[in-house]
Image (cartoon, rainbow, N blue to C red; front, side):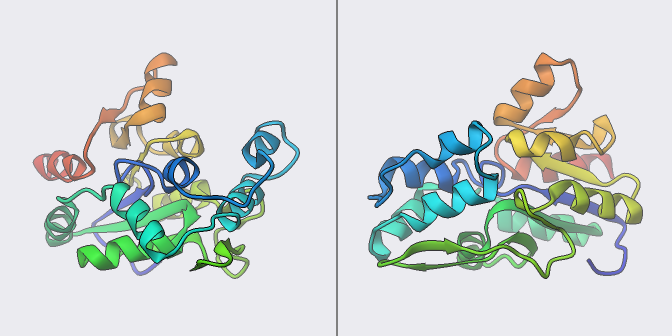
Length: 219
């Protein structure tokens, strides 16, 4: 991470900046060579989260049109470029923290003309070998279980900005979301439902650009 700006926002990507997760769409829409439920192995504790994703993504068998169709159906928030520009003009730095794959994250951001700092698992797609994930062993936020340690990224952000913001939607976002102050926590999807169920406060959002609206209203 670079020198301190006035404000820091750490955000998940799948289901947070996009409407749908790559994982869900890939399992639903793409042909697969997998003959085993690797996600069930993860839930049962037999393999790590990273291993489950790597095996599922690596078993994808589709052409470029098929993979591009899934990326389009993820539905990146169309308001993202303007929201990022507005936040940056107000002194915000936005950091993407994802246990997914940097390959499709950067592909979607590049298509939208948005350049962000991204911490995610490296990967390469080819029709004959699927989306091959690799562990980010050189990352300062490497964690064997998920590849990228979102909580470590949030802790580093909090060292630079005690009022750092976190936004997420899924189970892997629960721990990092509870590191920030309740009024600096944004949630949708499963994370929002879970926080409401346990009585933890948060700001709801959908789409992601609503976060920018809320933060800029406060500044």
